[in-house]
Image (cartoon, rainbow, N blue to C red):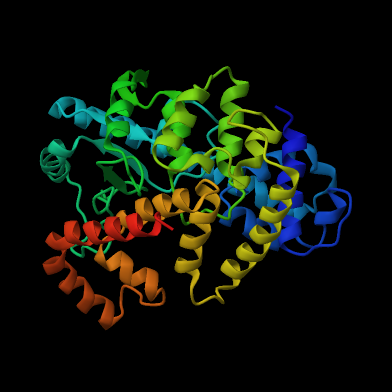
Amino acid sequence: MNYEYALGQCTNYLLDILDVPPGELPDRAQEHWSDLFRLAADQRIYHYLAAWMLEYWKDALPEKVKHRLWMDLEWNRARNIKLTQEIVELAKMFNEAGIPAMFLKGAAGLVRGLYPPGWRYISDIDVMVREEDTERTEIALKSSGFTKPESKLHKRPHHLAPYYYLNNISGIEIHTKPYNYCFKNYIVGEIWNNSEKVMFHLEPITIPSFTDHVWILLRKDLINKIMDPRFGEYLEIMIAIKDGYRIDKERIEKRAVYERLPNLVNNASFYVLKDFGNICGKTVSHDLYKKFKRESNHFINIKRNEKTFFMHLKKFCLSVKYLSGPGISDKVHTAYNLLCSYNTIGFIKLALPRIGHKNLIYRFLQKVERSWEPKDQTRKSYLKRFCKIMMRY
C-alpha cells in the first residue's frame, strides 16, 4: 500500500469539502490545519493522517502542529494499550463464566494487530453474545463490578445500554447483532460459525473471520455514514490486505444482493476500495463518482454546520438511492428493509429529527412506545402490503 498516495487522496478530498483552492500538497493544507484536523476527526481518520503527516510531511509542518500531532498519537497509543488490558480482562471474565463472546470492530482489530496502537481511535469495546445469553452476560458483568445507566435512552436495537467500570477508560457495548439494520438473521449465525479464536496476551479471544470483519465494517452505520467517503474503513482494510489478509469477495457480494443492498459494495462512497485496491465489486463509473463526490461535499458541509432540519430523513432517502438497485422494485425493497429496522420511536425521530433525548415530547413518546411495541408486527404487515402495491406500478 502506498501510504503517501493514500494520504494525498484523503487529504485532498477533505480539503475539497472545506472549499480550499486546488494546489500541490502539502502546501495546499497550509493555514488550514485546524479545519482539516477537525474534519479528519469527524471522518475518523485523524490519527492515521497524523502518523503519515509526521512521516512524510515533517519538514513542511509548523512546530506547533508537529507537537500537537505527536502528543495526540502518544495519547491514543497509551489509550489503546489500556484498552488492550481491558479487552483481555473482559475475555477472561466471559471464559470463566462459560459465555461465548465475540469481540467486534476496533477491539477485533486490536486483537488481530491490524494497525499500530496509536493509529486507530477506539471509542468503546464491542462484544457480541448470543441472544439467549444476554441475561447471563448482564449477571456476569454486574457481579464483576460493571454498572450501566438507569435510563433506557442508550439502548439500541442491536445492542444493550453500555456498561462501565470505575477504573476503565471505555464502556462495554453488549451486542446481540453485529450492527444495526440487521435484515437476515442467518448472517449472524454465519458470522458465529466462521469466527476464529486467537491467543492474545495468553487469553483465548473469539473474533470474526477477516471477511466477516470487513462485512461488519461495510454494514455498520449504514444510514448515518451513507454520504461519507468511508476513508477510515478503507484504510483499515487496505492495511490488513498489505499484511496478507484475504477477503472472500464472492461471499460479501452474495450477502449484499440477498439483503437487497446490491450497491453496498458498489456504492460510490466505497470508490476508494476499488480504485485503490479493487477489493470489492466493479469499479464505480467516473460520472457516478463525480456525482457522489459533489453530493458528499455538500452533505458533509451541511452536517458539519448543523443547518439542516430534515437530516435524518435526507440520510434515509440517500441510503435508498445509493444502496438499492436501479429499478423501482429494488428501491421499494431496500426502503422496506430499512424501515422495518426502525422501532416506533425511530419513526418519530425520522419525521421529527430535532426532538432530542431531553425533550418532554420525546420522553412522552418513549413511554407510549413501550405500549405500542407489541404492535410492531402489525406495522410491518402494513409496510409489506404498501410495498407490494408500489411494486405493481
